[in-house]
Image (tube, rainbow, N blue to C red; front, side, top):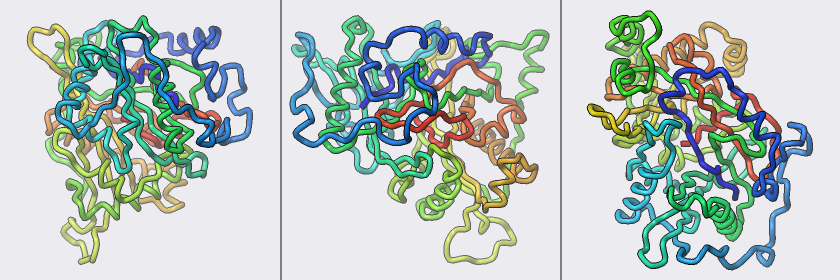
Length: 442
């Protein structure tokens, strides 16, 4: 299954200030060959965006058509797997990613995936050890490359499609001349085929054949002075630091009645609320209660989840089950600050899933930008900013997918230069706008 070659979540400091060449990369890449991707079952760059019938590009393979042996590696390397439940192995993966994964163009910031974050990301219900593919040095056993796959089900224009989410493609910097990434992608594809999965979804900061959607990052400063100090953002021309800090100052208290941390007992209600909300989007996950329990219950220093419980308000009538009307979550993904004398990390919060109770009328109102529905969402997200600031985060990031465009500018998010491209493998879904995307990949 084709993984995102360099699954860059390009959300670092310099993405805070928009650049003036937003499509230069796309223009350049459509005019050159892609030796690996041109051999894969993905829409080609010279195809019309919505040409062809929606659905699988190639038929599923029978067991006797699937390669039974691993792809060959250069001399001195061997295949392995990573067990995220093993402390030693998750520590090895942390070290590989910490030194070799996504960093910004100027090498000032690098993502810092904590071991507890990686366990959460790699061990959802039904995960397969064979889909966490690694390459090691034959003599020393040192971990040198990795790619992961996890099972999921997506709603793709109304069709429920089982597939694999590909992530964390990482090759040690000293090995990047050996073209290890295509071999990793082929091997994780083979492993997925062996278990009967033939479609995938992945994201990348780079433009490949061919995105189904392109989303842009937005960033909301929570601790402006620190972000300026480390070069994550710049002081606006003509503004003093005091003015800059005051511009981004948040209230001390949240404003949404009934807002509280999500609990285990909320899982059924959140599952129903999220499912109803996500049906509005042609590309969105289909989550079971077990998956909601894994992905959305709060996890210390990893995931922060809140619900709006009508029973928590002073005039609420007694009910047998929580009356959950809104839900919101964000996860923690700090960036290491390289070479700064004072700060060693930027604590970044990333907006994850959220949902509001909407009947058909409210959904139509939201699509049309009706003030009441949109104001409730803005209030919820503003409260989320307050909670993130209270928890010690420096910046709050999101993409312009789904309904996010309703609150980014009013809540003082800055439009970034970083883009995230969504891809499907062996599945043609046609082109989508960011507002049609309901899938958030970590």
